[in-house]
Amino acid sequence: MEDLMKEPYPFIIAASVILIVSFLFGEISKKTSIPSVLLLIIFGVFIKLGMDNFGIGNFNFLPILKILGTVGLIMIVLEAALELKLERSKLVPILMAFGIALVGLLLSTWITAEIIHYFVDCSEYKGQSKLVAWLYATPLSILSSAIIIPSVVDLRNDKKEFHIYESTFSDILGIMLFQLLSGMIVQPGSDAHASGFGSFALSFLLIMAIALISSYMIVLIFQRISSSAKLFLLIATLLLVYSVGVLMHLSALIIILIFGLVIANMDLFFVGPLKKWLDKKKAHDIYHGLHVITLETAFVIRTFFFVVFGITIVFSSLSSWSVLLVSILCLAVIYIIRFILLRATLGSDIHPQLFIAPRGLITILLFYKIPEYLLVKDFSQGILLFVIIGTSIIMTISLIANKKRANKAIKGVQSLDISETKWKIPDLKPNSES
Image (cartoon, rainbow, N blue to C red):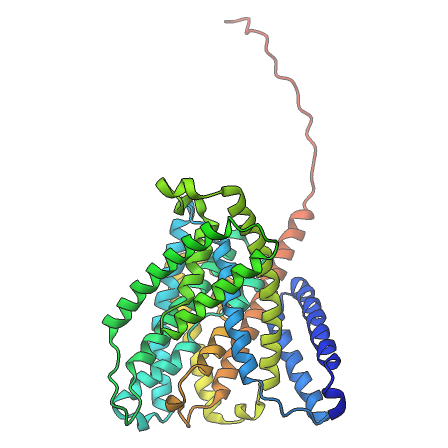
């Protein structure tokens, strides 16, 4: 077996099979409303069992998971940004989704942090224990656009757009909050000073300026490139700019969002003197090409990320009663806050939006980004696993119920008798009495 694993072909076969199975899961998801991501995680668990059976389960998948997660996040946010049309008619839905994402993130993080602070021992951080609890609560409070966007394609247009807006905003705001908290916590025994809200606000303004300038430059430069490989060059440029931004401790995901918005809404951003510099036909070609590439790349990255995550799952972490209690409380917080927010803003028509609140790629990625000196020994990764699987199962049940309800309504309409009525030409003769 060891000699076989030295050859590249087993890995090529495995990767090919995983992609084919992922495509089949996508087709199953369309017919059953079971999220393909959940099926991929389960598939990863079975792969792990097979690897253990053949004695080849000693791989360190953490570096692979981090790379896949980062690239997948970029592709998913870019894919969502390309779908966002900044039209006057959509201003209210966009602002509403932003407000719900922001308030939901802050409330959920606050209450979840209180739960973690009460049940998990963070005393080693002394005066910073509350901030550490907030840091751990943030990933658990972020919606997963990687799961939501491919899962809501069959919903009514207004509901689908709401989920795309909300999950995208939740991703970006959650990462910004995580970075703010990371900068506010000082390493025990270190002489370094914590960065405050002022420095964070300054870095936010800086990244917004970088995002706008780089977006305009990329569009104007790449519309002049005639090479057939320019779209992958464009993706490489975005990855480069994002990575440099992260190394500078900036919220670099904003660069990806702004670029996607600029190229998807060229008529809005290229006005006045800038309009004459834009070749609309070539820019639209770039937009449509990017749309295809991001869709395909996001599918591949999402597939391998969640399969690898399934392989890394340690189910023994779920055996603790304290883990179970904290996880159930976290789930309760998610849906109680969500019910209050949606009921207050959207009214009574909040199904299935109420239950579409999965945690996934961002949650996993941010947990792996927690600095080593902030790793709380008493915090079990079973909480992370339980919340991710629990929210995915709840969303699955809700989507299946919604599909059954929709199919029942369609069948009810189709069963109605359609009758015919003879139409008589009205008498147009003048009234003799008149």
